[in-house]
Image (cartoon, rainbow, N blue to C red; front, side, top):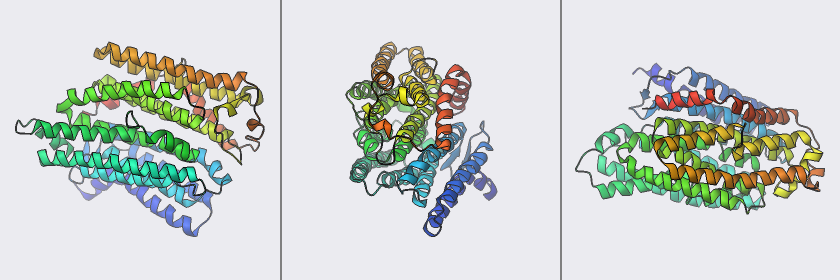
Length: 481
């Protein structure tokens, strides 16, 4: 393969790396943060253009088969660019009000995006771990980005310690796989696992360590301890970023390692994913009922949504993978809308924190209350929003695979979730207005308002015509193998 071909395959990552370093340097000497915002958005646009130019129906590898470009990488990378672009638009006014709008934020998000891209396109355990550490270190720093908030520092320390342990588990699993197969190439590991001389006990331990590392990055139960504290402690734009864009990397890591690398152990990891899916759905939704803070509620909600994704992936079928890919795209869109609404409702002195702070929103701000209605109806999975179709496709794939009881548990879990989502809608529309909303959103931000409106209305419009997104997810999953 020629050098020009290699550079063509990796040109989006090269562009992101150059832009991240440039923004970091410009942020030191050049204080015009509006220009840094524009440079970052332009970087995402250019990276998306070059990613879209790559062939979707052909698998291309580079750097001694350490880097792969296929339908999965294109699908997830394009979604990552789009999601990060929305995160930056939502975050801009929030950071400006709190004097946090600087080049470090944009540089760290670009470095995190580079790590996400490396994970998505990794076909080698070493490059996968490098991407994972680049992403993790960027996220640890972002959580502690607001130095004046003790909660942010505490959350960052918890995230760092637990993240280091999870990375250790994953690295230990990688070392075991290398020890028994003699290779770090995911494709070679898959082919050598059929060797009868491989110790099944060591292989089982390797699988457990790998699955534990993946589950931590997802925030799946019982490895969810970091999720509520990080969601609550980090600044809202950082929480929005952590709860959305890195999830694409987690999905890619799971598919690369389990479906493509450890495919011969499908019965083992299938059972593990199924158990974690059921526990995550039930634990997340039941625990969310008792929450009084909106970001902690969304944290436990995220755990339950991860359970639905795991349920689709656990089937191991093309339909299940397609449903999970669609679900992750829909979930990220809903997450961006929900945290965008929180940012929009946050005043200059204090962030919107308690759920009861939404009291009377329907009377004081009818349009924002309508957007809240659509967002939480979609999170609850109520038609005609896209959240309903996403959950329905997961349950349908589960039933088609023959798992009736897991499908029933998923339906029961969704019904539990409907309770606390509708409670928020009830507080917004039927409770008496609180004091907090009197001071919220006095200064209009047209950019934020328009973005939030389009994002939220998309949940309804795509829900009315879901077949296009599902067709793209199905095509992507069919071309993976």
